Length: 162
Image (tube, rainbow, N blue to C red; front, side, top):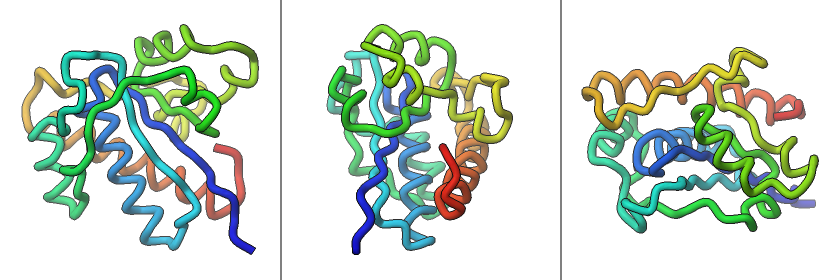
């Protein structure tokens, strides 16, 4: 019997830096473990980059780590995401507040968490936005999100709550 899909959404401001990296690295790690029943997507709130591919620096840092995010396209968060996704990971407090604007009930709210909380529960440590930073800032974001993805995969494998 095939497992029903588990759906995870990654959210940042523009959906061109952090959330595409988070989506790409998690998808790769899930495939490596044969977890094909998990669906991962990403989105943002800034309309400026609508339908654009991820920032070239995100694409580069991912490519250097054998993760291809070049086919991803920016999309905006929508209220139906609260129905489709089982877990919604945000990168910082602004993203958390943005998603909260769409919450309709406690069930919706329970789906939302800072991605960093998989490593440091309850600390709500932001994943810094590297957009105005250097390539090294993108590398650090990749490393952080890769560590988070490892923990998410481990929790899925052990049947733990996300």
